Image 1 (cartoon, rainbow, N blue to C red):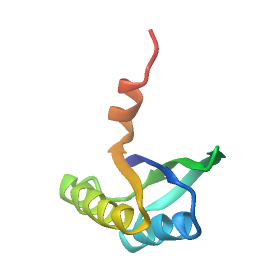
Image 2: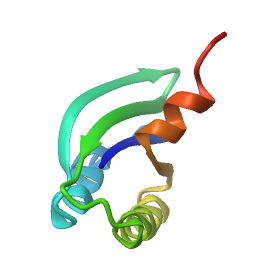
Image 3: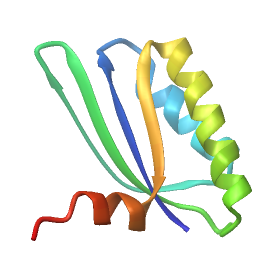
Image 4: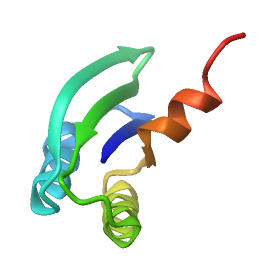
Amino acid sequence: MKLVVTVVGVDRVGIIAGVSTVLADHGVNIMSINQTILDGVFNMIMMCETKSEDMKNLTSIQEALNTQGKELGVEIRAQHADIFLSMHRVG
C-alpha cells in the first residue's frame, strides 16, 4: 500500500527523526521526501510504501504518528495515496 504522510508545525530539532522512526517501526519504507521551512514553519510530504494492504495496519500507523506529532508539537497525517491524490487532483 502506498501512503502519503504530511507534517506541518513549528520547526524544531528531531521532527524528521521522530517521524522516520515511527514509520520504520511499522515496516514503512520512505520512497520520496520533500521538506521546506517557511518563516519557521516546517512542512514535509513523504511518499511511502508498506507491504501490508491491511487497513488495520494503516490505523496503527496513523495512531502512532498522531502520538509522535503531539510529542513533537506538529500535525502529522497519513493517508492512502489514492485518497490523497484524488483529493488534490485538479480538473
